[in-house]
Image (cartoon, rainbow, N blue to C red; front, side, top):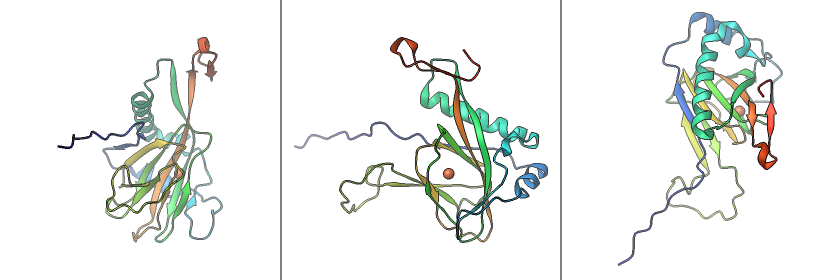
Length: 210
Ligand SMILES: [Fe+2]
């Protein structure tokens, strides 16, 4: 008789998904929906706010607290830092996808963890796609899609959802099939505090923390 084999994954990619748990206030919504747009990235691509520090605005103070708490939780679970270090939000901006618009595959340089908060999205229609960040040595057609055979992970998203992911992980958005404009708020982060260990000559302190 054939012995049963235990096949398991090593080094999984951590994706975080959490809901705000409340609707946006009128002040938050009107601020986020009325930001002036910056230059477009190309035909068919989504538009982004000219303001790239939207989370610095006091109107979004409560939303920023929710995002900061979620980042702290994600960072603590996925890094288990032994030193005094935390993630600081750097740039933050909004994206507006009209019906049929897309956001091509990309990642976020100069950032450790990135996130997208959905201001207006419908779970039945809207999603974000993550791509396996590896060269496909052999493309053997698979008869089944699972965690090992798939190179794309689709995460459905709705209003109030926050998705956190490693900034280096390629992601994108397919052309929307929804009739409504999908609005999202993206942000980058960078660790501040004590990184690394001086005893193995890998010490690094970023910011004012010593
Ligand atoms: Fe992105």
